[in-house]
Image (cartoon, rainbow, N blue to C red):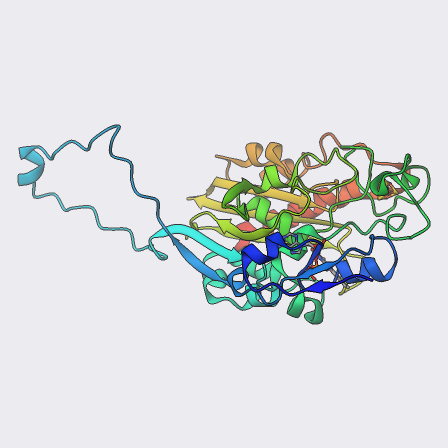
Length: 352
Ligand SMILES: Cc1cc2nc3c(=O)[nH]c(=O)nc-3n(C[C@H](O)[C@H](O)[C@H](O)COP(=O)(O)OP(=O)(O)OC[C@H]3O[C@@H](n4cnc5c(N)ncnc54)[C@H](O)[C@@H]3O)c2cc1C
Ligand code: SF4
C-alpha cells in the first residue's frame, strides 16, 4: 500500500521518498489508469514556500572591471539637459519569481504578471478548463507526462515505458510530432513550457540551481523523459528575466474542439517594434516535437525587418524547416506555419 506524505518545508519535501503530487491532475490520472508505478506520494500542497510570487532585486553592478570615468569639467558645466530617468522600474528589476505551486488560475489573475508579463498571464489564465486551472500548478504543468494514447494505455509497453518500439510510428500518429528528435514521437504536452521558453525563463531546482528553460527541456532525444530534471529533484520556482515594457505578444493554438483539449499545434510570440521595424523577437512552438521549440530561424528572418504582412508570411513559412512528418500528421506542417503567422500578426497588431 502506498503512503501519502505531507511535508511543510522544502527540505522535508525534498527528503521524502515518493512521487511529488502538486495539483494531482496528471499524476493521479496516471496512477488510476495503471500506467505509472504506484509509489508513495509526496503531497506539496502544504509547503507555503512553494507558493510565493515576487519581484527579485537587481544584481549588484560589477564596477571592479571598468570603473566609471568621473565627469569632465565640460560635462559638469554643460547646460544640456540631463537625460531623464527611465520611467520603468518594476520593482527595480531583477525579474520575477513564481513558486512551483502557484496555480495556473493564480498566474492568470496576478496583477504583476498581467501588467508586465501579459503573454504568460494570458495563456496561463485561459488554458485547459477552469477546474484544472484552479488546482493545476506551474511545476505540475511543466512536468506533466505526454498524452500519446499508447503511453496512456496500460497494455502498451513502448519506448517511453522502457520497451523496445514506438507503436505510433507505424500506427496512429495523427496528434504526434513532426520533428523527429528521438525514438518517441509523442509531443510535449506543456503549453507553459513553450511560453516560458519564449520568455527565456529559468527553472529553479531545490538547492538553488538555475537551469535555462532550454537546458531544462533538453533535446527530446531520450524517450523515457520529457526534461532533464534528475529523478527525485524538486522544482521550487520559475524565474523570469526583467520585463520588457514595450513588448507585444501573440498566442495561437489550433485545437480539435473549442475548449478543454490539448492543442494540435500552438505558437507563442514576443516582440518589440522599433518604429516600423521588428527589434527583439522570440518565437516558440508547441505540440510539434518531443520538446517545445524555439524557432530561431523565424526569429532571425524577422529581426530588423519592417513588420509588413509579406515579411511576417515569409518568416512564418520557415517555421517547419527541418520537419519530417509521418503520413498521418503531415497536416501539422501547414498548421504550424499558420499558427506562427497568426501569433505574429496578433503581436504586431497589439497583442493577445
Ligand atoms: C481537459 C484538459 C485540457 C488540458 N489542456 C492543456 C493544455 O492545453 N496545455 C497544457 O499545458 N496542459 C493542459 N492540460 C493539463 C493540465 O494543465 C495539467 O494536468 C496540470 O497543469 C498539471 O498540474 P498539476 O499541478 O495537477 O500536476 P501533478 O499531476 O500534481 O504533477 C504532474 C507531474 O509533475 C511532478 N511535479 C509536480 N510538482 C513538482 C515539483 N515542484 N517538482 C518536481 N516534480 C513536480 C509530479 O510528480 C508529476 O509527475 C489539460 C488537462 C485537461 C484535463
Ligand atoms: S510516441 Fe512515444 S509514447 Fe507514443 S507509442 Fe511511441 S514511444 Fe510510446
